[in-house]
Length: 119
Image (cartoon, rainbow, N blue to C red):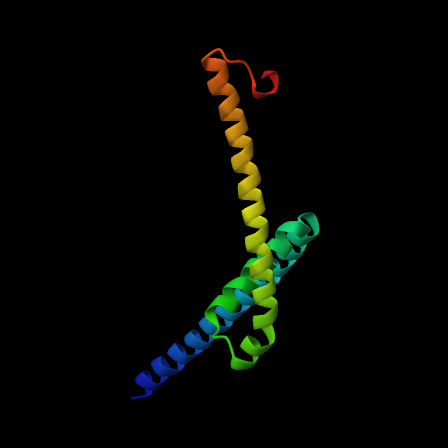
């Protein structure tokens, strides 16, 4: 019985020593990670900002939107959405006109009719 109690005490000491060792290693790794992260942020602040924005977007995508957020942000979202659609339409129309112009010049050139400016 005495031998069994000694083994139990040794096992408990080894377990607590193991836990303390794990805790020390985790603390050291966390401290080292903090130092490395700070150095990376100092050397590449734009990447850190982009990472923060990406993390914020991920968190926002995971969390449900509250009713209050919907009430406050819906008017602004509608304005931004409308302005974005208008901008996309203008860019698409401009790009289409330029492609038509360039393609038309190439077609006229191919058939020997000259460019659109030479009529």
